[in-house]
Length: 246
Image 1 (cartoon, rainbow, N blue to C red):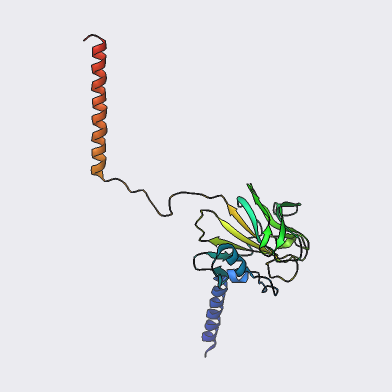
Image 2: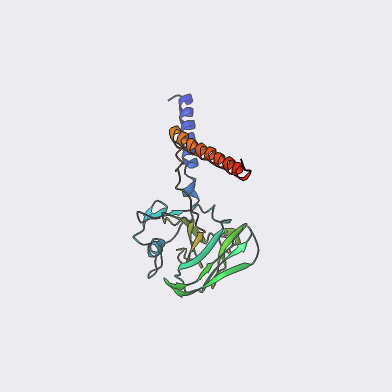
């Protein structure tokens, strides 16, 4: 093989490699997760408890066939500006006490607690309604163990302690997310799971457009409207003549 041909082949392979790397950024920025500790449930089981059915892995997502939990890129769930109106605990598999809240802004600030979590596993309570979140904030968990922010740079070990899934297929006209926190160092992300919802928005189904009436119908409606107007005018003139003694 001549040197020119070899050089062209190397350049082609390099370009192909670059294209492969460029078209698969999602897998490069997803935080790896360990399996659950014995006796605890994993994320697919937590989703099944909340939404029913059997959730199986589909790439980086989970689905029960009708509902899909879509994994959010970990570079995109560090700061938030969604207007969530409610949050409630789904599960807690940890010996530590748990609480849920936010940090205001994209850095610094104090932990603002929304609720404490009581119980273990699925026998848990803790919720907040009528939330009015605005601006930029970071999701957070408090309680025992480490104070955790959705932004890795805020955490004591600078590691990602929260993974996020957008739940599609519920049909309740909301944007629904499930967030899973890691409170210590086993990184199974089942220590605290919280569902977040925006307000329901109702409207016509996507892609549905108003169908215009045929021209003949518009002509009939115009004729009827014109007849009514003319008839009304005639009746008005008749009343005026009578009142004037004509």
